[in-house]
Image (cartoon, rainbow, N blue to C red; front, side):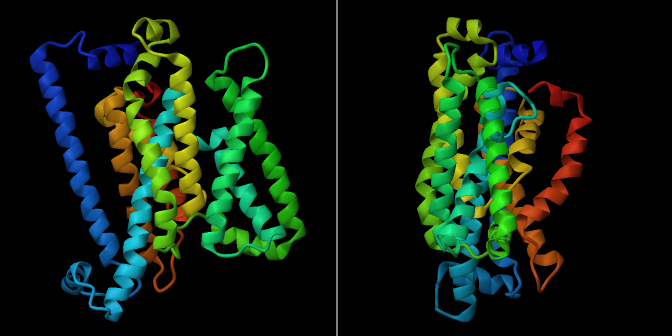
Length: 354
């Protein structure tokens, strides 16, 4: 914690000399530009590589000139929406994970702790089992409504009583709601094999089969949540020093926490609605960002927003190629790759300084 405070204070410009600050700023900005360039390359690979082999020159040509050929249909109707969705969902999961860990000051916190993911899952289960909903377009809005409803319930439970709302109380309320909804989902799905058969394809987490209508449906929520999250960087730096110090620095503690919870709900809810539950990114990517740039949230949040979609799209590409002509869902690939990566991160001493 002490080292974390020194890092944040240093980031605020109170300790390091001016040349050192300039070198740090240049290094971090250069690293972010490099990460953006790598993300652009992964996006291009995502448009190029897939089950249907298309030469790169043809892919590049139909990317800018839609001539209605079979290759153009594959690129524009399937691969571009899939890539855009991976970009948005990855950024949302990375940002919501960084926000969750900063607000709770818990290195193992991740967005699902607030019950958002399970709320979305329960709504999809209800839609499939009782409302006859099928297909991605129908489950998107159900999942989003379920995530929003679960967030409201968690906030109401966490704010009851005379004590002020704290991250610990919200996490406990989220854990309770998650347990209740998990039991409900299990009961419904065990009694209805047909619903379970449909639900398992959504629950595994995937970018496949999502078209541009899904992208346009969730994009406003994801972009709004992203702007809100990035705008909280300075208050989160103050909050990291403790409530009293944060107040002395002019941080409105209650407003910061409320806006942070709202951003997490919007980002995680919309991402889960669009692609299903995808683990690892929200937990591990903020740690990678902190290893690269320290604890300053002004850099952790942008880095998380860039690194997470890069990893998500990379995992999606691997899922397309590893078992071709079949596909592995990206949720499976991130889980398989994420476990050893996270264990490796855990062995590094810097992980504890979240």
